[in-house]
Amino acid sequence: MKKKNLKVGWALGNQEIKTRTISKHLGWLGFLGFMGPIAYLTTDWTGSLAFLVFFGFFSFYFEGKMSGTLRDERYLENERRAQGVAYRVGLMIIFLSLIACVNWIEPYGYKAAYTFLIAVLALDWAVVSNLSIGLLYYWDKQEQDNE
Amino acid sequence: MNEFRCELKKYRVLKGLTQEQLGDQVGVRRETIMRLESGKYNPSLKLAIDISRVVETPIETLFIFD
Image 1 (cartoon, rainbow over the protein chains, first blue to last red):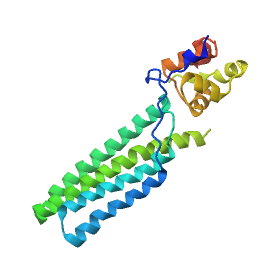
Image 2 (image 1 turned 120 degrees about the vertical axis):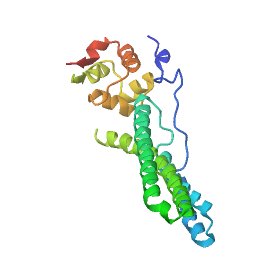
Image 3 (image 1 turned 180 degrees about the horizontal axis):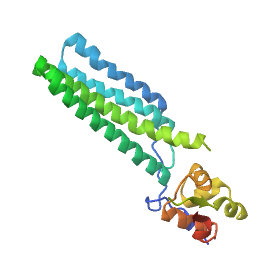
């Protein structure tokens, strides 16, 4: 049997697809998330809290550590599992935040509720980004360490 | 629940292949082969067939469900 004909990636056709190559030092960009509260405290511009989403750049650290990894079927399985957990956590955060907003924040006025929701949604995005790639890295690494 | 056993290591060594070489030929990482051999990973049908072709061993000999 010819070996060259057997080089196939699961669900990827005849291509071997690797993760993108980026520097793990890009994870430092996550500290840009502090721009949100700093800008809010100095300018009182509510929209600036949306900068909290930059905390999601911490995920570049894990992505950098997994640069050039072959996305085989086990990687894809772990990726789907990690994204599933991350999205569930993200939706739960939004759900609990809405309850908190309606019950405890909204009585302080619509501006407070609006500010709270902007901050929560931005942080939620960051949490989901970090969690999905962080869990993927953790499971992938943990499984290798257990060998 | 069925217990999964994998006899891949024996047939891979008989074939003179390393985990890396086998992984390269079937398009997965060495770690995936490692986990397969230790019975900690349940492969897809596609991967199981690819591996059985490479090591030239029937699929039911390589992967056993008790």
